[in-house]
Image (cartoon, rainbow, N blue to C red; front, side, top):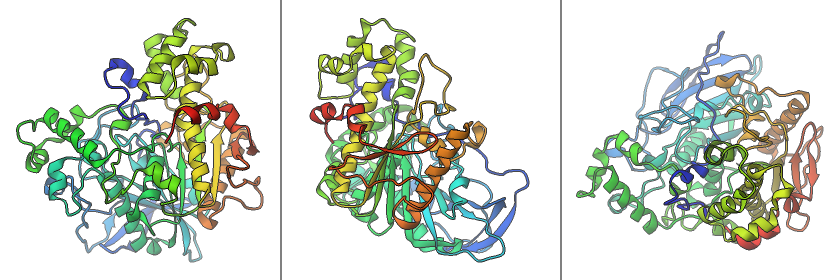
Amino acid sequence: MIRGAFAGYGSLRKLLVVLLVACVAPAAFMAAGASAAGVVPTDKGPVRGIETGAVKKYLGIPYAAPPVGDLRWRAPQSPDRWRTPRDASQFGPHCAQTASPFGFESDSEDCLYLNVFAPNIRGRAHKDMPVMVWLHGGGLTVGESDDYDPTRLVQRGVIVVTVNYRLGYLGFLAHPALSAESSSGASGNYGLMDQQASLRWVERNIKKFGGDADNVTIFGQSAGGLSVHAHLASPKSAGLFDRAISQSGAYDIGTPSLAEAEASGESVAVNAGCGSDQTAACLRALPVQSLLAVQPEIAGELAPNVDDDVLPQPIGPAIESGQFNRVPVIEGSTHDEFTIFTALFVEPLVGPNPPSFFYPVIVGVLASTLGLNASGPDIVAQYPLGDYPGVLPAISAIATDAIFACPARRTAGELSEHVPTWQYELNDPDAPQIFVPPTSYPFGSYHAADVLYLFDSPLRGGHAPFDADQEALAATMVTYWGRFARAGSPNRTGVPDWPNYTTATDTAMSFVPPTPEPTTDFSDDHKCGFWDAHTGT
């Protein structure tokens, strides 16, 4: 598995830095010409948002009390009430994280806010609209809710809610002292608890914004997609959502035990300054920066744990056995997931055109550091260098298939035994790259590219620079997502039919511009027969 696989490899630890490309840079939504929207009552007090064109926005609404002081590392608590209308025209603070190419530095623990985006339908009442709750990516270590402008989805008659949740050690640290004081006898899954608290807020309040609390879709990409899988597996999420979409979220559905997570937490306490006083009081007295300073780069080292409370069993076995919250699911990935990681973390180490004799060496290191149950020579035999335009594209193909593509297909197959399931792959060879500079090889459909077809990125120029064919594909994807949220199936008149995934037909939808088309070549394309025999969930 990915978790912990890079220990001791120095700079090569950066090969999978947090699997965090699900984020785009933070942005302000206060567009020119915005005007005040009406006041909406919530169970804690009224909020006044803004409206810009076709969308009403209610931003920075607290769904839980600030998890500061004695509330650090506790389950989210109810926020205080307010009486006069609360200004909901600005986003709340980002959860604490270090500076990265994918988000802003923050030391705020007061960050449990959500945002509601609703259609601005003038002249007639709007109610009982489907609701979509977006869980951002970022390896559970970085990211923020205000990175995603959902206008295109909202224009399809969907209410979209975006959520902040605790990150890094503040969101996922387990420790014996924290477990001892908890009524559940567990610790570490605070970020997932936050997400569940936001879903309970939606259940109580979304009707006032025109939404249907009995028709809620959770969706997320990368760590957000992993979170979607966690909520499928969590009994405490039962009844809080009715459909689920996981985008590139099958990369690591193994889950450590509480004991393993607590042992790791004890080491964190030592490194952060509580070596001789491993008490909850010492931990809560640590400055945020002390925790951020020792936080690891690798996403898999910060993960939900099996705590017999939020997660009574690992995510993978829960899905495989059918012991999960049974709702319709879309499971997806992108054709070239790893190209962006290769560009960011491999190319700087080995150069843009490493000689061919480096290839077996790099593959061997990749296999051992990623914990793949396949030898370097076996992998090289499956991926002969002559099949690729260079070493780096070959490396990207190996890691894409082993870490993302084939796990997504396996997960879709396991889900399909119990619930209606649809699998997709973004397969645009020229997907716009707005996150990182050009590199020595094409990015193709890189990790997070599918986000651009659903959301705009205001800080990076708003709408992605699509050509006409890509615009057509984006419109179809938004239609699929909106229809799935409304009816539990992505299919409707006017878009290509998307077949259900079953292991018998093994059919995924290939999102190629301009028109998606079903394919049965996914397994062969990604060598899933090989990886299914050498890796597992």
